[in-house]
Image 1 (cartoon, rainbow, N blue to C red):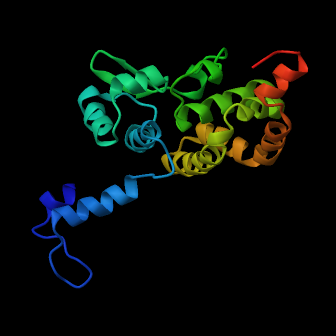
Image 2 (cartoon, one colour; image 1 turned 90 degrees about the vertical axis):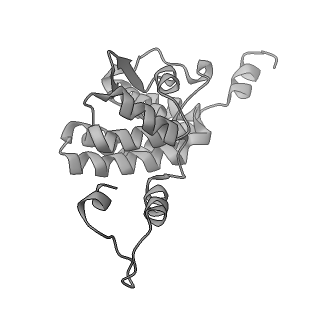
Length: 196
């Protein structure tokens, strides 16, 4: 939007003046990231702006509202740290090893992907696949986000992070195979004589 203050007019392809409303529609369409939940949309936009660096709480609050979420909700979801008027996205290494998606009521695709990377780095394809099995409904979105973040990380010069996303992309078939072969919770209960 800074272009509107820099130039006297922004033009359409036919030479007519582009209204701010039209520009906002284009911007929102680009930033909508319809494949992702609101928390992940926030994280993608924040990462594009700040990477892993701190940014002002006020900007995060405005962006969170625009993405139909909240800073408090993002902190609760486990993807954002907020303190002293600053916020920053959590890096993969900041995610706890003890995470259990069955006990988490708010799992953004962003969070799921970073836990998957953590599991893969720590314990390989088997652990990542077992985790992915618990996140089956988010599987395709996780894969798509990994591709997108690889591209963004490369562009930002974040080679370590890009490598993590690329590792998931490269190992996706093996991870997904483990996930597909993992027993469902009902199968696990039946195996051990449990009741639903």
